Structures are given as C-alpha cells and as structure tokens.
Amino acid sequence: MHYTNFAEFKGGLLEAGFSSQEGKNDAKIDMLFEYYRHARGQTSLTLGRLKQTQALRETLGSVFDGGKSQLLLTPKASGFDTSKPAPTPTVGKTVLPRGLKAGEWKEWTDGKERTMTPADWKNKNTQQQMETMLGNRWSIWLNDAFILGGIHSHVPFSLVSDVSDYGDAKSDFAFNVTQRELIGLITFGYSRGEPTASGTGYKCTNTPLADGATFRAYVAQMDLYSAAVKS
Image (cartoon, rainbow, N blue to C red; front, side, top):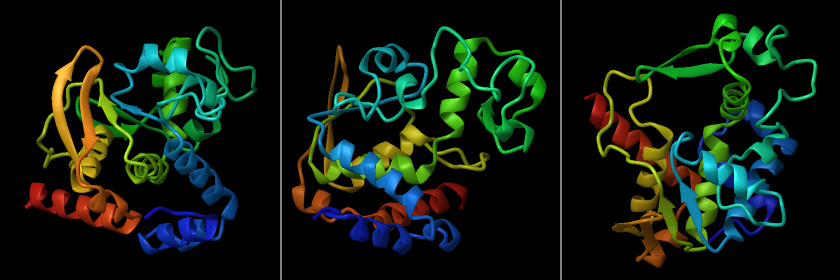
C-alpha cells in the first residue's frame, strides 16, 4: 500500500491529525507529497543528526535535483549557500529573519528546546545560520512523509549517527527526530543490521507491515511511546 495520488495523501494527513487550518492549504500538502514521492523513488535513504550528515548534505544536493539525494534536507534544497549568507534581506548579522523576530524559531540547548534570541543568531557564523534556517523550515509532517515514502518502497536505510534507545521524560518531546525515524522503521517492518563503515543498516524484513504504514498509525505509535516514557 502507498499513497498513489494527492487525494489519498491528503486524506492520510487529515486522518492523522494534520490541523484543519493547515489542511485547507493544498499548496503546503503538495510540498509534503513531493517529499514523499521523492523518497519513494530512491534506492536507499540516509538518516542521522545534522552534525553527522554535514558532509553528505554538501555533496548529495537537493532532494529535487533529479532524484539524486538520499537525505531529507540539504543546503541546495534550502536555497542557501554554505560559504556566504543567503542573498535575501532577511538573513545576516544585522537583519533578523522574520521567523526569529516573531519568536517562532526554536533551538536545542543541553537537551532542551527553547526559543532562539536575536543574540543567539548574531553569535552564529554563516554555516550555523544556514543550518538554523534549514532546521526551522522543517516540520514533523514533512519528516514523516519522507520516512513513509521510503518505507512504502521498502528501500534500505542507513543510520550514520549514534542514537539512544531511550526517551527523555524531562523533555517537551520524549524522542528526538532521529529516534522518531527509527521507531517508524521498527514499527513498520524494518530490522537493524550490524554497523558498517557507512552506518548501521535497516532493511525491510516484513513487507506487509511496511505496506500498511500510514500517517495515522505512525502518530499513534509515537503517542504510545511518548506516554510510556512520561508515565
């Protein structure tokens, strides 16, 4: 099973709790659908924290560059350059991005998420600013769409970061993004292999589970894991 068209994909999102207000924005859902379709067209996908995937993100390019990229977010996908500030009036050391000024941008510090301040932004170098912009245009729905795309095509995943198996009961979010991705894989028919030079492999060993993966089932499983950690 997979989402064969936009209508099915949109229905799956709304069923999983994608907000009614967001659900009226077909343009936004279409963007998520493109990420889903892109992942379905890959022969393999790579998972990992931002720091560990830096070199790969610089070489693999955009997820829309002819289907070549195995990663979700890359500098090319963002439209930003890694060597100089993006040529827009909202980026730089003195002019603050709109999302930052509105108090919408978040950052993880010492295992906790907090709102980023103008001082935080000005203290970052160009590379760090780019990574901040990448992270803050991301959404959990986009991430889930990408992972489900790979699962529905049964492609192998490679994990390039060390990730704890345990959730954090003290955090606002019991599991970080990479942990969520791995929970999705294990839930929907994937098994972990031995570590290799290119990372730890995850292969689809139960295709019926993978074929039955949905946004709703993914969200429900994460709710169960999070509730167990915080209980």
